[in-house]
Length: 191
Image 1: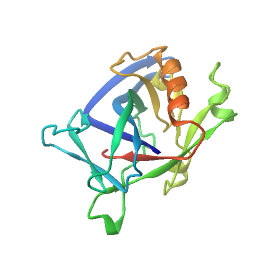
Image 2: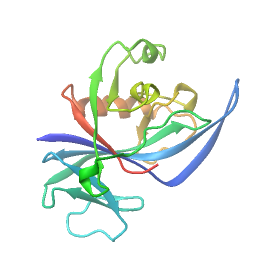
Image 3: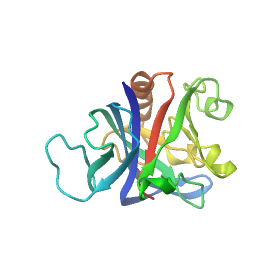
Image 4: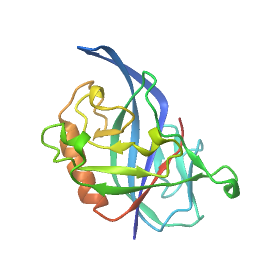
């Protein structure tokens, strides 16, 4: 069984966070954890949910190969920082008829940047497959507020849209258990 993460940022939900460095801006998104067949592609279909379809805020997931069996293990709200910070774009393969292809993710322990956030022990997921050096530095890690993100993705409990929250700790603990230490795929399906 393969583990696959899917990130969608639509519909746009922007927010502001006052900090000692001025007002920071971010946006909320949705991160799903799926288990099942290895997926070759994922996109969002605006059609209503069908039998067994996995709903996302703007439609349902359309997965390749057709007939692949997956189940949702977890769903999280994410935050990402705006203000000109790098963000992970969707990946497309020329052979995929505009279907999204995955980034890879791996578990990382002792990341020095993440370790600055007390209680993390530097635990995070590193995203692989970015084109630019900034994209290659993107991590998925705990972030109580958007000030802890410089291009990274911060999961928290589903529907937690507080600008500052402690639910990032339990969300990341659960993600580490669900994804484990084996490599997994991450599909980014929109900007």
